[in-house]
Structure formats: C-alpha cells, structure tokens
Length: 100
Image (cartoon, rainbow, N blue to C red; front, side):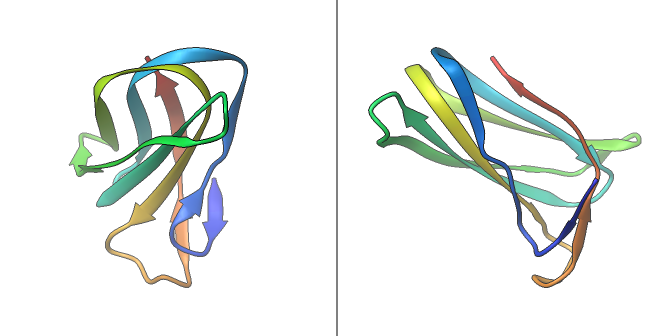
C-alpha cells in the first residue's frame, strides 16, 4: 500500500536493459490514470504515455500499450494518479506491475 501525495510515483530499474511493449498496473478499485515514462539505456526518455482504468470486479487494471516495442529499456517511471482523490492525499493499493 502506498499512502501520500497523489500521484504515487514508482521508479523501476532493470539490471539488464530489456524490450517493453506493454505496461500493466493492477491497483485497488477506483478511477486511475497511469502515466509511464520509459527510459532507454542511454538515459533518455523514449516514450511518455498514459492509460486509464476503472474498477473491474474488485480491482482496476490499467494497460499502457506502446505504439511499438521499445528496445533496451533500462528504467520505467509510472505515476499512478487516483482521479477521485485530492492531490494531497491518496492511498494506492498496488497489487502488480507487469512489463511485457
């Protein structure tokens, strides 16, 4: 569980750069926008893209499909924004982050 300012920010670094085409985030039931910055091995931002999710059963799934696979991804920085919460206070129940 992540509690604090909205959006919650993750910074995921891969030990070995890898290709990424899809980023999927599973969070608790609410309204969400996830914006991901995808960095390649030279440190530059290759892609910045957003996706939105609504509750589906008990959780919300937000899937960001990149237009084409990005090769040599070294880092992904997802910002998880709860749309029906204030900027000062949000609780994110983060269940899974997948990179495909």
